[in-house]
Image 1 (cartoon, helix red, strand yellow):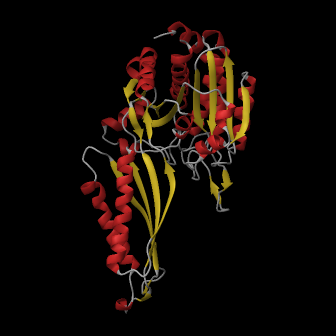
Image 2 (image 1 turned 120 degrees about the horizontal axis):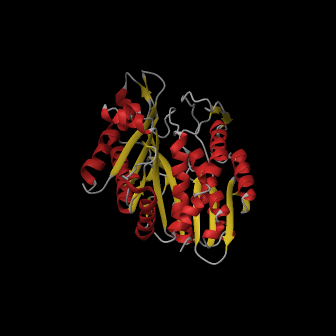
Image 3 (image 1 turned 60 degrees about the horizontal axis):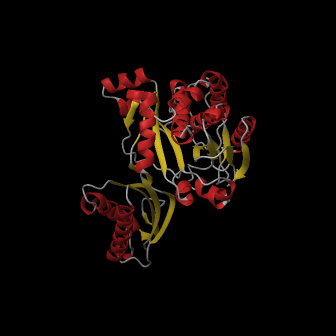
Length: 420
């Protein structure tokens, strides 16, 4: 690996970074913040970046923070971490578990928890940024440390772009990001091409004609119509999507009616679609619209159905050349712990940033589950039951070696460009 000795020199400072970094992580975990509310987190991030010598820009796209460290001529590497938490209650039982609450967009008081691992991402990137700043004699170029708000809302990355990110930072040669996953701690890996699915949520309002349950002949029953649509939609993936393509279509919500003997005027469906190519994405969404319109017509609905797309996330598709470079660098440092990442039907908005900037990117995953516990669950065939996944109230990465591996991974990947 080019610059192997330089990488070792930068990573030699990890033992000094680890102490404050672990405390920083625990503090973030105890004080999670919802999307676009990450003010405390952003303040702490900005303070730490400034202390490390970065030019700091705060409030980029609501609460985003960008640190720029210029270190002579050379490539520019952008490293990104997301900062927001989820509106849910943590049940890990950890001594540093969250008991925080916040007011959501509807004005309701809700529990808040870092049950996706974004606090770990922030701590890893701050550690990596500090190591690279302290080891600046070992590399040349510019480092952009980007802390993004509102990944869970799906609009944080675009918000930073719309706020003028391109004018604040030197144009990157590559953008890099990572996510902790329910895999053994110490393991990490990536893959070329699609790695995270695109996601689209759809709210469909069906208009019937209500009436008394004893006189169904005088109504157009939207409940029956909704049931027919749900059944018919099951054929979109099994009968309309090519076998070599992957797609998931979920009807997650049906809302209709108030009483057993009242046929309502309307019904609402909420769907979620996950795909790995734009062609399949368009095909599935078009099929949903076609089926819903046809079923409404067959039922004699008095009004056309309404469609609302929301919570849309882009496809994450890794650049092959950048990914190969990162994988070679990872293998040099982490050896057999590096694996080919499986396709993930999770979705996120990181790719909106490099896509808007016109630069290649690579996204990788790292394990966060205590290895012995994971192996016991695997041996018993109980991984799905015993290993908490992201967004589970019991999900919390084991601090070490996860924090060290995530920090080292960011340094190693960045140095694959910055160390020549």
